[in-house]
Amino acid sequence: MATPLLAQPAAGSDLLPVPVSERNGVLEVLTMRRDPFDFSTKRRDQYGEVFAMNALGVRMVMAYGAEAAGEILMNRDRAFANAPAWSYFIGPFFNRGIMLLDFDEHRHHRHIMQQAFAPNVLKGYFAEMQPVIADRVAAFDTGQVKLLEVFKELTLDIALEIFLGMELSKAEADRLNKAFIETVRAGVALVRKPVPGGRWWKGLRSRKILEDFFYAHIDAKRATQTPDLFSVLCHAESDDGHRFTDEDVVNHMIFVLMAAHDTSTITMTQMAYRMAEHPKWQAKARAQSQALGPMLEYDELSELTVLDNIMKESLRMCPPVPAQPRMAIKDTQVMGYYVPEGTMVAIPQMANHRDPRYFTDPDVFDPERFLPERAEDKGHRMAWMPFGGGVHKCIGLYFAGMEIKTIMHNLLRDYEWFVPAGYRFPMDYSSLPVPKDGLPVTLVRRR
Ligand code: HEM
Image (cartoon, rainbow, N blue to C red; front, side, top):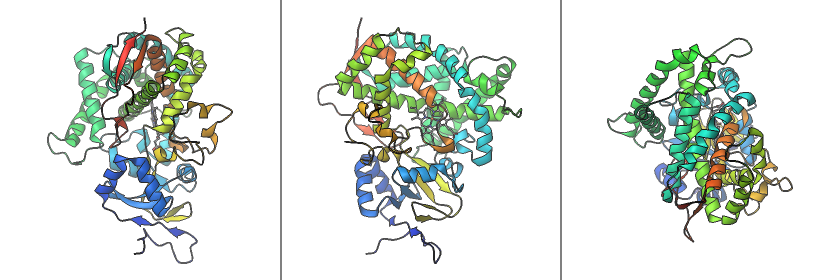
């Protein structure tokens, strides 16, 4: 039987029609979640690098490979938009977050927000986070611990201190954390309606709690300048004198907290797993950390080269944002295939990161592939893209590197950790990729 096609290009066009897998959408998503690497290999073998499938209630064009990622993210004819694509998944909970804005409006907001991530401001966050992280890591429980849970709690606490810059009571911090977690979880709810007690309903309720919290404190934040993100967003001004409205600040705060949290937690969990699986790499990274004190100076970050390569390799093998969706807002093309207006398109960077055209033995953990003499990530500008690319490229990538390396630096100095021989990570790919078992390790204090 002939393969069905998405839509025929106009007569006389050189473009090819996109082949469609008409397999059941629910089964396809379940198969992909079970093993995304095997799934992508099999489907590419059958259809090629660009094909459409049913997934999560929509028809989605999968565009594999660095070349396709470049075409979509560089978006030269402004055919692909973020808002209609991301809103489908997280719109009600992260409405008007910067990633859900497009074109001129996005550029305007990004321009103002960029000031909260300028080098001198980053250095301020960096100095603030050093003692918080050193104290908190030193107080970790030892013995059998689930590192995913440990990292989650730590990054949320850091977010409250560094992003909010407020002294909160334990009860208030717990209330915010809970609201925040429920808002994040709602995006991947299977029942996407506000059924009382369900994830979606809890997400909407929690979004309201977060909004009320930020609105209640915004006047105080506008009144004085402090080095936290909340204050910086209240006072940031573009060259032409534009500032964020109260509503903008609240929407951006809620979005940035979400964008910063799970992504960093997942990266550290991956790094910790790889270093437990390969004790040689744990020892190498520790040797560099021991040469420095517990509180890092900003310039010392660049001395942690082993940790940097372990982070990059962990982000390659398991990028926390496994795919990026876009919506075609006019008829366009990807890699010579015709993509009609209204089509959802996905860039599957998790699979792209295993592309043997750029990475030797792509399934093997090998931090040295990032050494300058190999630089496999530079084979194509979209070969290694855990932080995305184009105008929506992660604005927090340097913040993420600072936070992750500071935490791992303290962990390496204070502890050793182990997994049993033969342990394998049971990954859950149903939303952002996390280990189902929370990564249980034996954590031993070093001194
Ligand atoms: C390892 C950690 C992180 C990873 C892997 C990551 C990944 C990403 C990716 C892939 C995107 C682009 C999504 C798209 O184009 O569809 C993105 C956007 C974004 N990220 Fe991150 N991120 C991380 C940490 C952070 C942190 C720590 C912050 C804030 C402090 C942050 C804030 C943002 C924001 C605001 C955007 C939207 C930018 C825009 O649309 O202009 N991220 N991130």
